[in-house]
Length: 306
Picture (tube, rainbow, N blue to C red):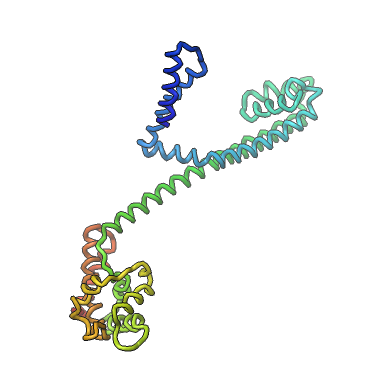
């Protein structure tokens, strides 16, 4: 927009400098008024209306097209029926079309058009039915359809904006949260009932990760097995991460592998760290799930997981 305004201004200045007289081109300088459009983005509520109206252009045009078809039908009918008796209003198709648009606009159609078509001041039921039926279809039905379409598009645009705002807020909130590499696994453990149930969950997880069933659970099995858990498809476990969660290898056997008991110790430690991160995230964000995080901490301490 700014580039177009500057280009038009330069052309206008060039014409003035050349002492040329092109009024139509000089009028293009009025395009500079279009800079006011830039203010729409600064006012959120005003921008909502502009976005809604822009989105409604095509649906509203479709509604107006239906109105045009209806008006054309009545204009054609009026031309064939009233052309000889009232050529002033229905002499040809374009004249009839303009007459029908006058009717739909409500501009003194009854006194200036319909009553002038009555003979000897008596109401002609056919003429009355012609205009009243058109007025009912065009103004009461079709024009309200146009308004309804415009309102629907406005509501849709506002809803989309709210959803986008909520989505961006959720993304920003998620970005602020502290997370761990094994959170997708640990989330499967947080709803345990007691220590026995927790051990069973961890053992089931170990068996699911330990695919070949031979020896212990090594790094490669652990790395590939994690991706089979819900929400962990994008987890990329590195050797550095593996060193951290195994306490620099202290929780591994001589072959650098987990057995079931070592895996239990590791996952209990991860569950403890997960609960601390969750509590910290809740306290930081002030979310409503603070109670659940507190309860989980109490269950961990009661079960003497550490």
